[in-house]
Image (cartoon, rainbow, N blue to C red; front, side):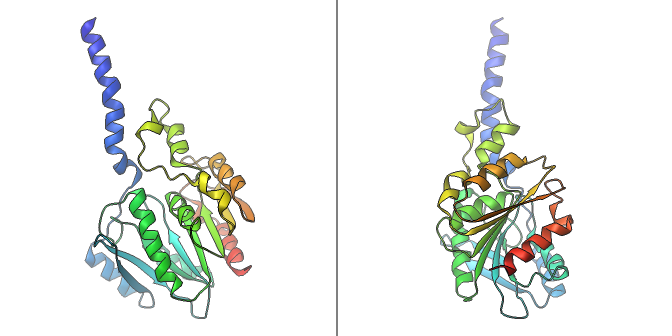
Length: 262
């Protein structure tokens, strides 16, 4: 009996400890590019500018700057936790977005160095804002899934014409509690991305794109964020799963109309 109790005790401690230590690997599914891959992508897109910025700690950050042929708004884009944003270099020209896009590689993703964390990604977001602001263009912000958490924190402290959130969440704690009901998530989670607390003080217009069949971030998490938003807001549902929203024509049409309306 004593041995069984000890085994149960070890298990009770081991599972949360393992989750705590492994959370970076669970949250940030890095998608790095080798230099040869980056150069090959750049060669296929000669009109796209590569941007490298040094972070305060010396980490080299990278983004793809897709420039419109005429003066246009500039959208800073933060992708999902397993996304290589370079896929949009082929996709954007097909949809006549009439905007320039700055596609940001998180630390440890694409051609950016370093290791991701909530603090690092949000800090880097302000560097990308400073770079974009120098263009003099009207600035918009877009964040998909995990990127919505980065975008909301940036929008809470900087001015934007509008914010596009794609399959967003209220907080990472709330989403994690849904998926890991037996774990004390609120005690364990270091990267909390609490967008719900920030949303009420954001005055920028919101376009919220939500997947009706989202198995990762169910729509009620997006609804809480949308309802708390401080500025004007638009809710668009797409008959898709979490990773297939961009396959729907309304996905691109909604963004194009949102960018053209301001």
